Length: 238
Image (cartoon, rainbow, N blue to C red; front, side, top):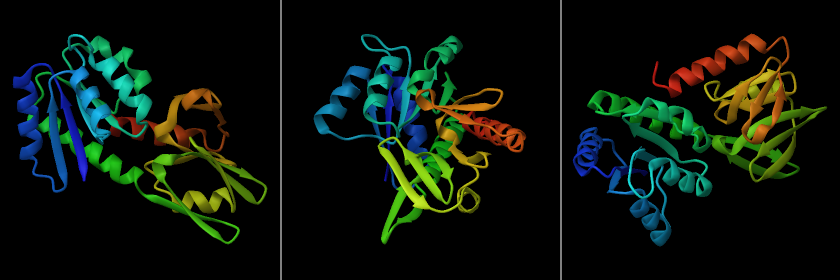
């Protein structure tokens, strides 16, 4: 099941968005409405639940959407946050909470549908599983858990937010098995999850928390093309 939370202090807008979500008639999707960031956070903390997708107004009294999203992001790195706003200037203030997309009020049914379907597609992509083996033990990681792969001699180190795993293999064999819409090879020894890229420098990719990953001349154009395509998709331009 995919859970959606709508948070907007204007209940007419919130109800309109809720009706738009319901009208999409997506199997396995549920939707809850909250009239403030305070109410939403209280609900998350008291019921100890989480949502996959948040449709969040930025301009709200007491606790705005950016502050609310920051609390959500501190507890859930995988949540997709779609900001709804009248103000374009907020776009530059919210990157620390890693928004998935922006929708400008008034939100049309087509724009809402497009954003939600892309968010659901992203959840399904990121939920794919990478299988590997360490000794005689078999392991699996969801794509969204993997930050990058690093090749070292005949071994590959898998870097995740919770730690690293070392398995025998080659980067060239791993890239073939991955979803190219999420992962891109930057170097003979590195594959990155594009969801974790924060910027691309001349010869480095900068990942979350400032981790630099080298770009080789061979893969320079490839990573730029792949990341541009990824960003365009994230921004709803495809």
